Length: 177
Image 1 (cartoon, rainbow, N blue to C red):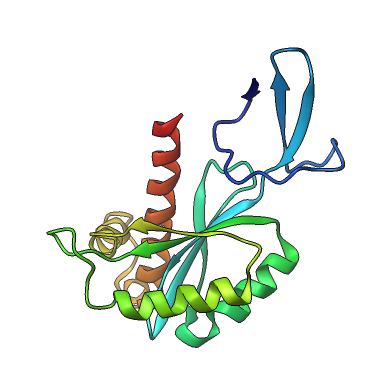
Image 2: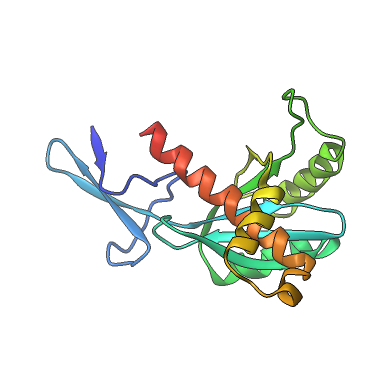
């Protein structure tokens, strides 16, 4: 049985070079070992007008803002990003109503996810509950003491919501291990 030295592994890809800095060491109980890649995880807070993106560090410990892009530019932006960085997973915010049913904007998100899977088929996509993330983002921005002029930037809320989605997703991985 392999034990994982880092609790954040998900969809690992095997590394050829054991010295690669983005690799995770797995040790087998019989003394064997192998290395797997630790690609980043990207969260997507999709919107028709603007989409907030967040990304983990290579060790999958911290979620940070990546960008806000217009709705139609998300896939080209992600293609460019994965050309520069190792990415193992996309986490797309799943909008739900309080009763657990999908919200009205779910249809647009499903269309986006189909296009994302078609354009980048080698990276898995999963959904993660995004209820209250915009409200939490607004509160976090206000409590951080960000000036009023900067708070008016609409993309800031989208990026911050994506960070919240991704950080919650990372916390859920910790709970599963």
